[in-house]
Image 1: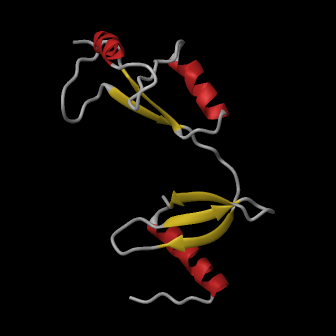
Image 2: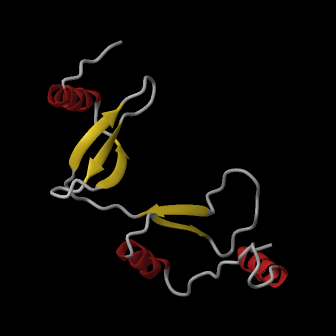
Length: 128
């Protein structure tokens, strides 16, 4: 069955006010909805083609659209684990308020330069 038909059946099956809640699909164009999500500072949205049929496993019918903000932050630290990408912990400039972390997607040379600078400022030395 198509997504819209499945949603209609589910909406009838799930009573209002219970532990399980049925979320309504927001009206409007995806671009306008995403704009509101971005303005609200939310992470993003997940959407699905209306005519898609349910199939288990991976599918191209789903789309996750992330909202990104580009800004400058203070670097609180960098976490590195062998075999995994490093990620930076960041804070707002001036306030020092923690804002989150992000994977460091730099080429190897740039990652090493960043790691050297972090070590210089923290007095740490890399082992292993």
